[in-house]
Amino acid sequence: MLCNTLLPGLWICYAPVASRAAALWGVSEVQVGLLAMTFMYVYVPISLPASWALERFGYRRSVGFAVVVMALAAVVRGVFALDYALVLAGTVALAAIQPLVVNASTKLVARWFPARERATVIGLAFVAPVLGVALGSGLTPILVESLGFAPTYRAYAVAAMIAAVLFLIFSREQPPTPAGFEPRVTIGEGFGVVLRKPEFYLLGAAFFLAFAIWDGVATWVEGITRARGFSPAQVGAIGGLLSLAGILGALFLPWLSDRLQRRRAVLIAALLLCLPGLAGLTLLGGFGLVAAATLWLGVFIVGCVPLISQYAVELCYPAPEPASTGVLMIASQGSVLAITLMGWSYARLGSFTPALLTLGALVLIVSFVLLRIRESPAVHRSG
Image 1 (spheres, rainbow, N blue to C red):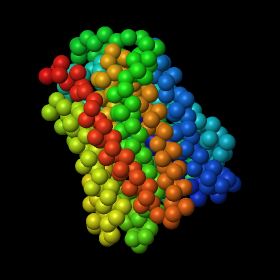
Image 2: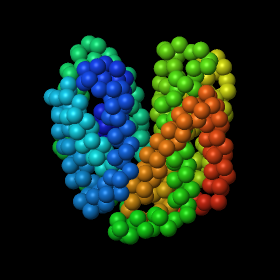
Image 3: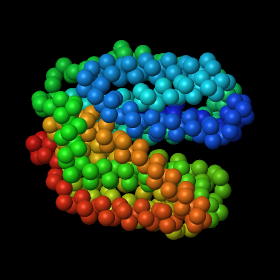
Image 4: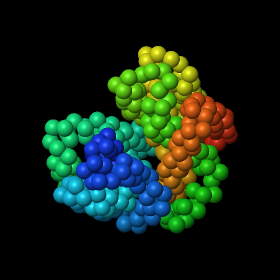
Protein backbone atom coordinates (compact mmCIF):
# COMPACT_ATOMS: atom_id res chain seq x y z
CA MET A 1 0.00 0.00 0.00
CA LEU A 2 2.84 2.39 0.79
CA CYS A 3 4.46 1.83 -2.62
CA ASN A 4 1.05 1.98 -4.31
CA THR A 5 0.48 5.35 -2.64
CA LEU A 6 3.83 6.77 -3.73
CA LEU A 7 3.63 5.69 -7.38
CA PRO A 8 0.42 7.62 -8.20
CA GLY A 9 1.77 10.55 -6.20
CA LEU A 10 4.90 10.52 -8.35
CA TRP A 11 2.66 10.24 -11.42
CA ILE A 12 0.48 13.27 -10.69
CA CYS A 13 2.91 15.55 -8.84
CA TYR A 14 3.80 17.81 -11.79
CA ALA A 15 0.20 18.49 -12.85
CA PRO A 16 -0.67 20.89 -9.98
CA VAL A 17 2.38 23.05 -10.77
CA ALA A 18 2.34 22.66 -14.56
CA SER A 19 2.75 26.35 -15.41
CA ARG A 20 5.71 26.77 -13.05
CA ALA A 21 7.35 23.58 -14.30
CA ALA A 22 6.88 24.63 -17.93
CA ALA A 23 8.54 27.98 -17.24
CA LEU A 24 11.52 26.40 -15.46
CA TRP A 25 12.05 23.77 -18.15
CA GLY A 26 11.33 26.05 -21.10
CA VAL A 27 8.66 23.69 -22.48
CA SER A 28 4.92 23.91 -23.07
CA GLU A 29 2.31 22.87 -20.51
CA VAL A 30 1.28 20.12 -22.94
CA GLN A 31 4.78 18.64 -22.54
CA VAL A 32 4.35 18.82 -18.77
CA GLY A 33 1.03 17.00 -19.16
CA LEU A 34 2.87 14.28 -21.09
CA LEU A 35 4.56 13.28 -17.83
CA ALA A 36 1.19 12.17 -16.45
CA MET A 37 -0.15 10.72 -19.70
CA THR A 38 3.00 8.57 -20.04
CA PHE A 39 1.70 6.33 -17.26
CA MET A 40 -1.48 5.56 -19.22
CA TYR A 41 0.28 5.01 -22.53
CA VAL A 42 2.99 2.74 -21.09
CA TYR A 43 0.60 0.65 -18.98
CA VAL A 44 -1.16 -0.93 -21.97
CA PRO A 45 1.85 -2.68 -23.57
CA ILE A 46 3.55 -3.46 -20.23
CA SER A 47 0.58 -4.87 -18.28
CA LEU A 48 0.65 -8.43 -19.65
CA PRO A 49 4.47 -8.83 -19.51
CA ALA A 50 4.29 -7.55 -15.91
CA SER A 51 1.68 -10.19 -15.07
CA TRP A 52 3.89 -12.87 -16.65
CA ALA A 53 6.86 -11.70 -14.56
CA LEU A 54 4.81 -11.79 -11.35
CA GLU A 55 3.87 -15.40 -12.00
CA ARG A 56 7.28 -16.45 -13.32
CA PHE A 57 9.52 -14.82 -10.70
CA GLY A 58 7.13 -14.46 -7.78
CA TYR A 59 5.59 -11.53 -5.97
CA ARG A 60 8.53 -10.48 -3.80
CA ARG A 61 11.23 -10.57 -6.48
CA SER A 62 9.08 -8.85 -9.11
CA VAL A 63 7.76 -6.09 -6.89
CA GLY A 64 11.15 -5.81 -5.17
CA PHE A 65 12.74 -5.07 -8.55
CA ALA A 66 9.97 -2.56 -9.27
CA VAL A 67 10.38 -0.61 -6.04
CA VAL A 68 14.16 -0.41 -6.50
CA VAL A 69 13.60 1.09 -9.96
CA MET A 70 10.96 3.38 -8.42
CA ALA A 71 13.49 4.70 -5.92
CA LEU A 72 16.23 5.15 -8.54
CA ALA A 73 13.88 6.90 -10.98
CA ALA A 74 12.63 9.21 -8.23
CA VAL A 75 16.24 10.05 -7.36
CA VAL A 76 16.97 10.92 -11.01
CA ARG A 77 13.94 13.21 -11.07
CA GLY A 78 15.05 14.83 -7.81
CA VAL A 79 18.73 15.30 -8.58
CA PHE A 80 18.05 16.52 -12.13
CA ALA A 81 14.78 18.28 -11.28
CA LEU A 82 15.49 21.20 -13.66
CA ASP A 83 16.28 19.00 -16.70
CA TYR A 84 13.05 18.10 -18.52
CA ALA A 85 14.63 15.33 -20.62
CA LEU A 86 15.96 13.47 -17.57
CA VAL A 87 12.72 14.00 -15.66
CA LEU A 88 10.85 12.48 -18.62
CA ALA A 89 13.27 9.53 -18.70
CA GLY A 90 12.72 8.93 -14.99
CA THR A 91 8.98 9.16 -15.51
CA VAL A 92 9.06 6.54 -18.29
CA ALA A 93 10.96 4.23 -15.92
CA LEU A 94 8.32 4.77 -13.22
CA ALA A 95 5.54 4.09 -15.73
CA ALA A 96 7.23 0.88 -16.88
CA ILE A 97 7.35 -0.67 -13.40
CA GLN A 98 3.93 0.55 -12.22
CA PRO A 99 2.09 -2.55 -13.58
CA LEU A 100 4.33 -4.82 -11.51
CA VAL A 101 3.18 -3.10 -8.32
CA VAL A 102 -0.48 -2.62 -9.25
CA ASN A 103 -1.04 -6.06 -10.81
CA ALA A 104 0.49 -7.77 -7.77
CA SER A 105 -2.38 -6.94 -5.41
CA THR A 106 -4.70 -9.83 -6.31
CA LYS A 107 -1.82 -12.34 -6.19
CA LEU A 108 -0.73 -11.14 -2.76
CA VAL A 109 -4.29 -11.25 -1.44
CA ALA A 110 -4.88 -14.78 -2.78
CA ARG A 111 -1.70 -15.98 -1.05
CA TRP A 112 -2.35 -14.42 2.34
CA PHE A 113 -6.15 -14.29 2.82
CA PRO A 114 -9.05 -16.77 2.58
CA ALA A 115 -11.67 -16.23 -0.15
CA ARG A 116 -14.26 -14.81 2.27
CA GLU A 117 -11.96 -11.84 3.07
CA ARG A 118 -10.34 -11.10 -0.30
CA ALA A 119 -12.67 -8.44 -1.69
CA THR A 120 -12.35 -6.50 1.58
CA VAL A 121 -8.54 -6.57 1.41
CA ILE A 122 -8.50 -5.65 -2.30
CA GLY A 123 -10.72 -2.68 -1.39
CA LEU A 124 -8.29 -1.67 1.34
CA ALA A 125 -5.36 -1.96 -1.11
CA PHE A 126 -7.23 0.19 -3.64
CA VAL A 127 -7.38 3.04 -1.14
CA ALA A 128 -3.62 3.49 -1.64
CA PRO A 129 -3.59 4.79 -5.25
CA VAL A 130 -6.64 6.99 -4.66
CA LEU A 131 -4.90 8.48 -1.62
CA GLY A 132 -1.68 8.84 -3.61
CA VAL A 133 -3.37 10.93 -6.29
CA ALA A 134 -5.03 13.10 -3.64
CA LEU A 135 -1.75 13.64 -1.76
CA GLY A 136 0.28 14.24 -4.91
CA SER A 137 -2.24 16.83 -6.09
CA GLY A 138 -2.73 18.53 -2.75
CA LEU A 139 0.77 18.48 -1.23
CA THR A 140 2.87 19.39 -4.26
CA PRO A 141 1.81 23.06 -4.58
CA ILE A 142 2.29 23.53 -0.81
CA LEU A 143 5.74 21.93 -0.86
CA VAL A 144 6.84 23.85 -3.95
CA GLU A 145 5.83 27.12 -2.29
CA SER A 146 7.58 26.33 0.98
CA LEU A 147 10.64 24.33 -0.16
CA GLY A 148 11.12 25.33 -3.78
CA PHE A 149 10.69 23.33 -6.99
CA ALA A 150 13.77 21.07 -7.01
CA PRO A 151 13.80 20.36 -3.23
CA THR A 152 10.18 19.15 -3.44
CA TYR A 153 11.08 16.39 -5.88
CA ARG A 154 14.15 15.50 -3.85
CA ALA A 155 11.83 15.03 -0.85
CA TYR A 156 9.69 12.70 -2.97
CA ALA A 157 12.87 10.79 -3.89
CA VAL A 158 13.69 10.29 -0.20
CA ALA A 159 10.14 9.01 0.41
CA ALA A 160 10.49 6.56 -2.50
CA MET A 161 13.81 5.26 -1.16
CA ILE A 162 12.32 4.73 2.31
CA ALA A 163 9.34 2.85 0.86
CA ALA A 164 11.62 0.63 -1.25
CA VAL A 165 13.83 -0.24 1.73
CA LEU A 166 10.82 -1.06 3.91
CA PHE A 167 9.38 -3.31 1.21
CA LEU A 168 12.64 -5.20 0.74
CA ILE A 169 13.01 -5.71 4.50
CA PHE A 170 9.47 -6.72 5.42
CA SER A 171 7.82 -8.30 2.35
CA ARG A 172 7.44 -12.08 2.20
CA GLU A 173 6.44 -14.37 -0.69
CA GLN A 174 4.34 -16.82 1.33
CA PRO A 175 2.52 -16.62 4.68
CA PRO A 176 3.77 -18.90 7.48
CA THR A 177 0.36 -20.61 7.46
CA PRO A 178 -1.18 -21.03 3.98
CA ALA A 179 -4.57 -19.40 3.47
CA GLY A 180 -5.58 -22.41 1.37
CA PHE A 181 -4.44 -24.37 -1.67
CA GLU A 182 -5.91 -23.38 -5.02
CA PRO A 183 -4.03 -24.99 -7.94
CA ARG A 184 -3.52 -22.70 -10.93
CA VAL A 185 -2.54 -23.23 -14.54
CA THR A 186 0.56 -21.58 -16.01
CA ILE A 187 0.46 -17.86 -16.82
CA GLY A 188 0.41 -18.56 -20.58
CA GLU A 189 -2.56 -20.93 -20.22
CA GLY A 190 -4.10 -18.43 -17.81
CA PHE A 191 -4.25 -15.68 -20.44
CA GLY A 192 -6.06 -18.16 -22.68
CA VAL A 193 -8.56 -19.00 -19.92
CA VAL A 194 -9.25 -15.31 -19.31
CA LEU A 195 -9.73 -14.42 -22.97
CA ARG A 196 -12.13 -17.34 -23.52
CA LYS A 197 -14.45 -16.25 -20.71
CA PRO A 198 -17.44 -14.21 -22.06
CA GLU A 199 -18.18 -13.13 -18.48
CA PHE A 200 -14.76 -11.51 -18.25
CA TYR A 201 -15.56 -9.18 -21.15
CA LEU A 202 -18.72 -8.02 -19.36
CA LEU A 203 -16.73 -7.27 -16.21
CA GLY A 204 -14.13 -5.56 -18.40
CA ALA A 205 -16.86 -3.32 -19.83
CA ALA A 206 -18.00 -2.38 -16.31
CA PHE A 207 -14.35 -1.74 -15.31
CA PHE A 208 -13.84 0.49 -18.35
CA LEU A 209 -16.97 2.53 -17.59
CA ALA A 210 -16.07 2.92 -13.92
CA PHE A 211 -12.69 4.38 -14.84
CA ALA A 212 -14.14 6.45 -17.69
CA ILE A 213 -16.58 8.16 -15.32
CA TRP A 214 -14.13 8.49 -12.43
CA ASP A 215 -11.19 9.77 -14.47
CA GLY A 216 -13.44 11.71 -16.84
CA VAL A 217 -15.08 13.69 -14.05
CA ALA A 218 -11.71 14.25 -12.34
CA THR A 219 -10.13 15.44 -15.59
CA TRP A 220 -12.94 17.71 -16.80
CA VAL A 221 -14.40 18.82 -13.45
CA GLU A 222 -13.82 22.50 -14.20
CA GLY A 223 -15.62 22.30 -17.55
CA ILE A 224 -18.45 20.19 -16.10
CA THR A 225 -19.16 22.77 -13.38
CA ARG A 226 -18.23 25.96 -15.28
CA ALA A 227 -21.80 26.86 -16.33
CA ARG A 228 -22.89 26.84 -12.68
CA GLY A 229 -20.48 29.63 -11.76
CA PHE A 230 -18.48 27.81 -9.09
CA SER A 231 -15.35 29.45 -7.72
CA PRO A 232 -11.94 27.75 -8.20
CA ALA A 233 -12.06 26.66 -4.56
CA GLN A 234 -15.47 25.06 -5.07
CA VAL A 235 -14.28 23.29 -8.22
CA GLY A 236 -11.30 21.94 -6.28
CA ALA A 237 -13.62 20.81 -3.51
CA ILE A 238 -15.75 18.84 -6.00
CA GLY A 239 -12.63 17.01 -7.22
CA GLY A 240 -11.53 16.32 -3.65
CA LEU A 241 -14.96 15.00 -2.69
CA LEU A 242 -14.82 12.54 -5.58
CA SER A 243 -11.56 11.08 -4.22
CA LEU A 244 -12.83 11.04 -0.62
CA ALA A 245 -16.03 9.27 -1.65
CA GLY A 246 -13.98 6.82 -3.71
CA ILE A 247 -11.99 5.83 -0.63
CA LEU A 248 -15.20 5.27 1.33
CA GLY A 249 -16.68 3.21 -1.50
CA ALA A 250 -13.53 1.12 -1.91
CA LEU A 251 -13.72 0.22 1.78
CA PHE A 252 -17.48 -0.31 1.99
CA LEU A 253 -18.60 -2.14 -1.17
CA PRO A 254 -16.00 -4.96 -1.15
CA TRP A 255 -16.58 -5.43 2.60
CA LEU A 256 -20.33 -5.66 1.96
CA SER A 257 -19.73 -8.20 -0.79
CA ASP A 258 -17.65 -10.38 1.54
CA ARG A 259 -20.16 -9.96 4.33
CA LEU A 260 -23.12 -11.01 2.14
CA GLN A 261 -21.05 -13.54 0.17
CA ARG A 262 -22.43 -11.97 -3.01
CA ARG A 263 -20.40 -10.41 -5.80
CA ARG A 264 -22.91 -10.01 -8.63
CA ALA A 265 -25.74 -8.45 -6.66
CA VAL A 266 -23.51 -5.90 -4.92
CA LEU A 267 -21.81 -4.94 -8.19
CA ILE A 268 -25.06 -4.47 -10.11
CA ALA A 269 -26.63 -2.52 -7.25
CA ALA A 270 -23.58 -0.24 -7.07
CA LEU A 271 -23.66 0.45 -10.82
CA LEU A 272 -27.36 1.30 -10.70
CA LEU A 273 -26.99 3.41 -7.56
CA CYS A 274 -24.23 5.52 -9.14
CA LEU A 275 -26.67 6.79 -11.78
CA PRO A 276 -28.54 9.30 -9.56
CA GLY A 277 -25.18 10.77 -8.56
CA LEU A 278 -24.07 11.05 -12.18
CA ALA A 279 -27.37 12.67 -13.13
CA GLY A 280 -27.12 15.10 -10.23
CA LEU A 281 -23.56 16.10 -11.12
CA THR A 282 -24.67 16.64 -14.71
CA LEU A 283 -27.97 18.44 -14.25
CA LEU A 284 -28.25 20.02 -10.79
CA GLY A 285 -27.31 23.60 -9.90
CA GLY A 286 -25.98 24.92 -6.61
CA PHE A 287 -22.78 23.87 -4.94
CA GLY A 288 -24.39 21.89 -2.10
CA LEU A 289 -26.48 19.72 -4.42
CA VAL A 290 -23.59 19.09 -6.80
CA ALA A 291 -21.28 18.25 -3.90
CA ALA A 292 -23.81 15.75 -2.53
CA ALA A 293 -24.25 14.20 -5.98
CA THR A 294 -20.47 13.91 -6.37
CA LEU A 295 -20.14 12.14 -3.02
CA TRP A 296 -22.90 9.71 -3.96
CA LEU A 297 -21.37 9.05 -7.38
CA GLY A 298 -17.87 8.53 -5.98
CA VAL A 299 -18.92 5.97 -3.39
CA PHE A 300 -20.62 3.71 -5.90
CA ILE A 301 -18.62 4.13 -9.11
CA VAL A 302 -15.12 4.10 -7.57
CA GLY A 303 -16.14 1.42 -5.05
CA CYS A 304 -16.92 -0.88 -8.00
CA VAL A 305 -13.28 -1.02 -9.10
CA PRO A 306 -11.75 -3.29 -6.41
CA LEU A 307 -14.91 -5.40 -6.35
CA ILE A 308 -14.67 -6.04 -10.10
CA SER A 309 -10.96 -6.89 -9.75
CA GLN A 310 -11.65 -9.64 -7.22
CA TYR A 311 -14.77 -10.88 -9.03
CA ALA A 312 -12.78 -11.27 -12.26
CA VAL A 313 -10.03 -13.24 -10.50
CA GLU A 314 -12.62 -15.64 -9.07
CA LEU A 315 -14.56 -16.11 -12.31
CA CYS A 316 -11.36 -16.78 -14.26
CA TYR A 317 -10.10 -19.55 -11.94
CA PRO A 318 -7.84 -21.55 -12.49
CA ALA A 319 -6.02 -18.71 -14.29
CA PRO A 320 -3.32 -17.12 -12.09
CA GLU A 321 -4.44 -13.89 -10.47
CA PRO A 322 -2.03 -11.66 -12.47
CA ALA A 323 -3.50 -12.98 -15.75
CA SER A 324 -7.00 -11.62 -15.18
CA THR A 325 -5.74 -8.50 -13.39
CA GLY A 326 -3.27 -7.70 -16.17
CA VAL A 327 -5.90 -7.90 -18.91
CA LEU A 328 -8.43 -6.02 -16.79
CA MET A 329 -6.03 -3.15 -16.16
CA ILE A 330 -5.67 -2.66 -19.92
CA ALA A 331 -9.41 -1.89 -19.95
CA SER A 332 -8.91 0.69 -17.21
CA GLN A 333 -6.15 2.46 -19.13
CA GLY A 334 -8.31 2.35 -22.25
CA SER A 335 -10.58 4.81 -20.47
CA VAL A 336 -8.24 7.52 -21.74
CA LEU A 337 -10.11 7.10 -25.04
CA ALA A 338 -13.41 7.93 -23.34
CA ILE A 339 -11.83 10.94 -21.64
CA THR A 340 -10.52 12.15 -25.00
CA LEU A 341 -13.97 11.73 -26.58
CA MET A 342 -15.50 13.69 -23.71
CA GLY A 343 -13.16 16.57 -24.51
CA TRP A 344 -13.95 16.30 -28.23
CA SER A 345 -17.68 16.34 -27.51
CA TYR A 346 -17.29 19.40 -25.30
CA ALA A 347 -15.33 21.21 -28.01
CA ARG A 348 -18.07 20.46 -30.55
CA LEU A 349 -21.19 20.93 -28.39
CA GLY A 350 -20.02 23.32 -25.67
CA SER A 351 -21.25 21.04 -22.88
CA PHE A 352 -20.27 17.82 -21.15
CA THR A 353 -23.93 16.89 -20.59
CA PRO A 354 -24.30 14.67 -23.69
CA ALA A 355 -21.10 12.75 -22.87
CA LEU A 356 -22.07 12.21 -19.22
CA LEU A 357 -25.60 11.10 -20.11
CA THR A 358 -24.18 8.70 -22.70
CA LEU A 359 -21.89 7.16 -20.06
CA GLY A 360 -24.90 6.84 -17.76
CA ALA A 361 -26.89 5.05 -20.44
CA LEU A 362 -24.00 2.63 -21.03
CA VAL A 363 -23.79 1.91 -17.29
CA LEU A 364 -27.52 1.10 -17.28
CA ILE A 365 -27.14 -1.28 -20.23
CA VAL A 366 -24.11 -3.05 -18.73
CA SER A 367 -25.90 -3.39 -15.37
CA PHE A 368 -28.75 -5.34 -16.93
CA VAL A 369 -26.41 -7.46 -19.05
CA LEU A 370 -24.47 -8.39 -15.90
CA LEU A 371 -27.60 -10.13 -14.63
CA ARG A 372 -26.66 -12.93 -17.02
CA ILE A 373 -23.28 -13.74 -15.47
CA ARG A 374 -22.88 -16.34 -12.73
CA GLU A 375 -22.07 -15.69 -9.13
CA SER A 376 -18.47 -16.15 -8.07
CA PRO A 377 -17.76 -19.81 -7.29
CA ALA A 378 -15.23 -18.72 -4.63
CA VAL A 379 -17.84 -17.18 -2.35
CA HIS A 380 -19.89 -20.36 -2.53
CA ARG A 381 -16.83 -22.47 -1.62
CA SER A 382 -15.91 -20.15 1.25
CA GLY A 383 -19.48 -20.08 2.49
